[in-house]
Length: 170
Image (cartoon, rainbow, N blue to C red; front, side):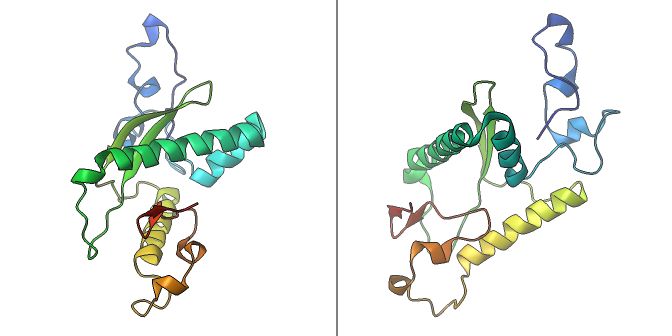
């Protein structure tokens, strides 16, 4: 998500909420709000932009750091996450990337919003739901023999499971 106003550290800019809050509910009130994409990019477009501006190596390093942030946060709360083979959860991660390409975890949403504010947002969230369902109900479900299916069979779209059989998936 992006703000409609350029961020500044100037004291004079502190009152400009459009430069500090990326929430759609705030940004859509700005005269500069983009109705087409709503100030959001897909993860694919973000990665392409970063590859073009900072290079492949820096982008891959950032992606590995973001993977680490997500995995570490899940390990940290693993004892309190319900472990029910009949259920699943989808978490939404808000990560800020600073000017030095360091990821900062802002928050984890246990129930991320799946409502769409733009057509691009609808496509993005529909793809997420599709990927979640492909992981939860893979091809051949319910007759899947997990011992005969490798980790690559569980990967779908731009999302992949972190664990399989209690072990990290490479």
